[in-house]
Image (tube, rainbow over all chains, first blue to last red):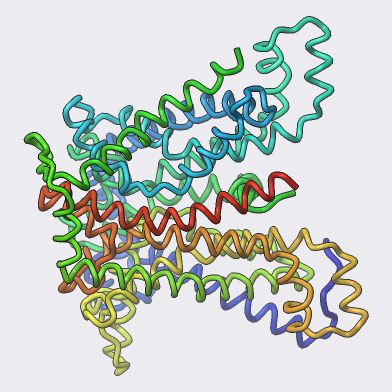
Length: 279
Length: 281
């Protein structure tokens, strides 16, 4: 794709060597995860590096039951789904207005949202928790979805903004001349064009809310209300010391994420880098 | 009418972030257990916080953490990203592999390292120890606990930086690279004179974000060591969390949150300045 930086064979060999070391670092712990999810606990104690012999598929059955995945996966899906829906609807609206400078105060709000991207969770989580407790919103996935929406919105707005800015102004003007009102311009002209951006935001927000730890562990406490990740955390911390079962539970949570990531890698990587690399 | 488009985002933001943040600032000057009525206590929370040795340990740990993350992962990521630019084939394959740790939940990453690598019973360190290598669980020693935790976060984090740097490097104009190559530039000359200056805005942004994120570090410390042993790996965010939810001393937690925010604010200032400057170009 790009012209070569250097041509010597030695440089190339060294480069591949360095890249291979990097790949080994990234994959080694993941390999241990997969390998040991297939072993009984006694084999892991003997040697975590050895191949499973025989393979113990029951780990997955026990993990599924002990981490209550049939319930906690539903919680996770509900939480991620609600967050994706809220972020995509509210942020495409505000990103459009800010990108097109439709309001006089667009600079202030862009500045404000940029600043909240970096606001530490600790700055608002404590009053929020006691407020939620008063309102009976602890153990409520929709309450947590609302927190995630606030948490991820600034990022989503900033990313979607770049997509709206890239749309040629003439399209909007043409639609207005044809007699479309501002809502039709937004929903019929702009939204379809930026839909790839919305999909990217949905993927990244989905991943983040699926994996999130601090807020989920604070606001969801009942065993049947927690997310799959928190159920795994509780299983590995309190209910089980069978590392085969723990790794099996981990694998059950990781596999859908990795499959989705590999299938949609371009979008994930573009979106993650999009906020920080222009062009 | 377009003003209405902003309303949903801003209402959610105000209710979840702005109002509680202002309450935190107020609570930092109050004594509150989370249940009864808060009472104004002036600077007592800050005095108590600054008199607490653990607070200074946590602050020092945050600074060490920042120093580690400003250097090690940035260097690793720059090296790998430049190699990805050099190789004619496979760069996408390697990029996807490096990014895998980023998409795995922190709770899972923490447990894999804890049980499968560090553990003296079920982990790699245990089996290497049996083979005679002098390895002990770094999380169990006060002198190494923080570094043990930081290593896990490093593993989880550097691939993200690598992908971002690689994306930036690919934007460097071909002619610049071509010209340097014709001049016979070596790899290090190419890095120092062509590539690094070209992606400086991206590196600066990542350095600023590293400072901000380093003061927010929570998940791995909380899961792996809970700040122990003997508070040796405590950081400000776990300290604040413990004060609020374990000691029910919300005022002091708020004061600690203010200290975290202070460092964040400095980073945010530079971040916003950089972003708006770029936006105007």
